[in-house]
Image (cartoon, rainbow, N blue to C red; front, side):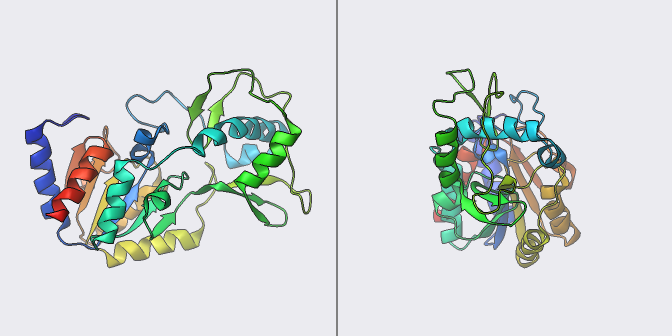
Length: 281
């Protein structure tokens, strides 16, 4: 199938998925592919350029890396802050309201599931709209830090006007050399986004809560994830080990295609909207 299913392909895929998921409860596992229609690029989609995200070790161990990150984030955050949920997010919220979806485990940090109306959401990798101090554990809204960074860096654009936005509230900039970083207002410690970086462990309580959702569900629906990293793939393994069916909607192959009962090579917005409509009937 392609990203734009014709009417016959959509009808066939929809019928199979509806039969597979039954009446629920279904737990949804989402990745960057569900947010591309909101203008947020993904990491590993068919049309995505190669990306090399910053690691936790780089961020903690090198002040130059931290300056580079915060400069890019200061510009990219403004874009992320204006994004809105798309039809895929709204469809999952509708399915939760209907009692079909019991909860969403998301690998995204964009908070768009909550904005769409989903109530039971596990932000597996954290949230872009919060910042924490690595020394005193103080948490503050990202919007408040934005005010401080703007005051320290008036008019900063990174040397470009037409900014390319990258995932995780990041932006591709020509230069970050002159950017001034803000430290914790309470203790002067290092500030870090409340986001799980590459090389950092997902908090155990979030993983256990995700396992609980899988344990209590009848099926798992994956939407917009290539399942490349164990962080999300572990929930597929959990479901398969329990004999529960897994359905995957994603543009391109995933690392769990062989374990899935159904794979649909398509974008999330159209497929999830059609699924929500099918449950309405």
